[in-house]
Length: 183
Image (cartoon, rainbow, N blue to C red; front, side):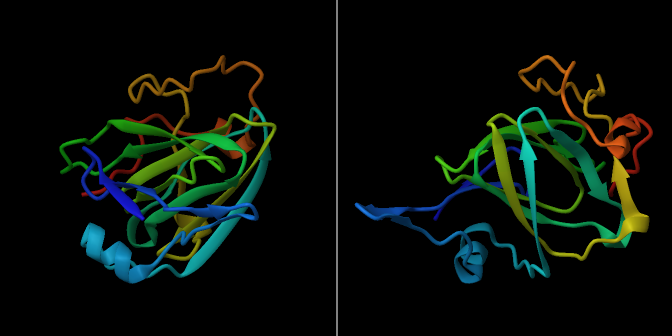
């Protein structure tokens, strides 16, 4: 795997090395020892999640607050998404900024998003299977959501937001200014 650090402390872009032949390819998508050696982070993933969404679905920007915060290793096994993470860590040099990365089955790219970020994605293909590992279990009472179109965050989703598909929860997201932050 090839690990690329970003301007966002603790956030990594990971490109698995694929070994291919006439049958297709094989790659490792996670290996704890290699992850630790490359990033210096000793993560303990405790839950795997998967969603299947169709074109035009925008999920997010989600996070869990307080002791229920989650670090995530995200990837797309089918389709293509624009994946976005927003830094909510007040003490971070990138506080309030976001990063957007295209994840797809073709590029195999992954993103490790540490605790203290809100996260969301927009499906760009006909459908997308999105998979992620988290280092803390889901806690409904700690779940939070920031508006996907908050002008203070300023995410350019690259599409007209009219006609996109959202959950009721996502439509009720709070502004960045109102969002619970991390130290």
